Length: 206
Image (cartoon, rainbow, N blue to C red):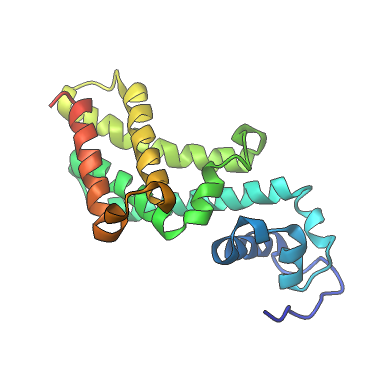
């Protein structure tokens, strides 16, 4: 890929946003190993030191990329909820949207939850974006429990349990070496839905 003409200064446009967007592009087309601050700068045609004016380290850049991933996940979940009023349908929509996002953006998904960023609380932007996405699931679980139990008393525990299952399904499906081939080849979304249905029935005691 031919790099853009090199800029004479790091001050141009919305460089921070461009660094994040280019980082995501590298991550999703070439993988995490190819994602370096030097390569992002080269592709944008800026000096090698330009990214340091926005991110003090590669870890900070990765955290910003992961934060953008969580914002995209939130938007995808909100789109899935559009027009749905039934609590059962809304909970399933939030869960299925999570798997859809992971399958569409596996490299980004793994960065969002992987060991490259062991503590989200050290990165406020990332922590806020991740919390916002989780809160959407928590709200869906709360509405589901009110509809079936008349109480949100178990909301925190139930949300954590359902998130664990959702995370597990998405992780399995985005790691083909650990997934039975027939699942990926035949019907990964059907497998996801059936798994969620089984667990949700257990949550409500049905």
